[in-house]
Length: 118
Image 1: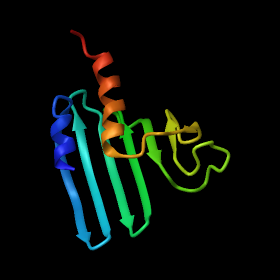
Image 2: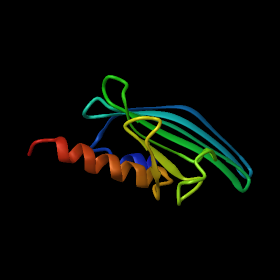
Image 3: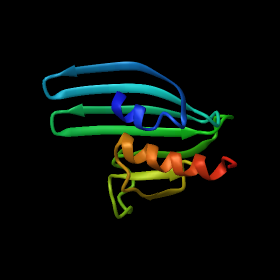
Image 4: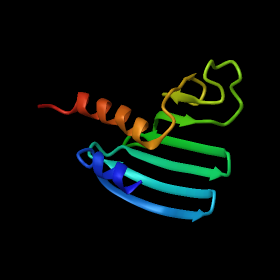
């Protein structure tokens, strides 16, 4: 995870790793990243053997949802089920091919860079 954060250090102001546990084939990560524009990404990524549960919840400086990527199995109509994202509101659900921190930070970097002058 730290290597991924280093790759995106140009957009990350601060980060806090609240939980990191690794035991044989299990891993739990919980972290918060704050970006240069004041937005935040709340990360929960859990591996239990062959099962994975994740949520990457990106909010603006006021706490409003920008995008949340997750794999909760409750949107069966989405072509990438169970992988999906909520854009702008919890009710607006779309397919998602971004499923890991590197892919998600690439999306966030593109959006932050497009807002940054220069």
